[in-house]
Length: 324
Image (cartoon, rainbow, N blue to C red; front, top):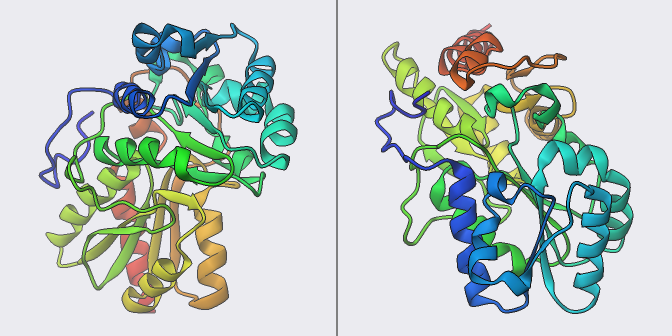
């Protein structure tokens, strides 16, 4: 599965989870207050990179996510900065009460890393796929929510996290994602969406892997004479309402693409902003009330309609409705 190929993006040979591990180690080297908590999955989340260099700042709590979160909150109360790491599905489904009470309500300074978000972890199967994680963490109003789309934005998000007041959620992925931004001087700011492709006919808004898929779709649509703007909505909260409203007003149609359930997902939040301030035709690409089976990531993305072709279909519908 080569995201961004049609758009001419440079491919990265490292999964985004490995990029997270590199970024986390850099942050730990720069900030001695940083500690890492692991749910016995450090060799999958790549949080274990810190264990090799700073074993006294790495705590494996085992397969006990509720305890993992509680200990992390306690360390934050003692003046440290915890990165609480596990699979997105395990943290949000097994430890939601602790995240809600000890982290969100307490508004502690900590980062929760939801690794293996979406369906592209593939053959690990549906029990480990975080397809409802953004809806769940979105129900906790004090969290900043970030979904990086490439290596540079993952580095930027992890580096920024300790400076953000209150709890932060960062979604990570098992698959590689192509380079969209330069590694040096990355144009990335919390709460500020990025326009990664200009276009006047409609807007494709994506997060995570769907940004590269959106760029592929835009390249395909351009061959038909339809110029699509592509927006990287990397911060789900605080959401950049100004960029969304401007896109709706300036292009007249919006498609939202996400590797997540449509119910309670990013698209529903974008739709609320559009409906309130600049109603235009909209279409949505995401998972439609289904638990996904095991399989190769490329096969799953195709079967469950998360490809650039699917974005193109939605874009054509929105564009046609715009002229109706």
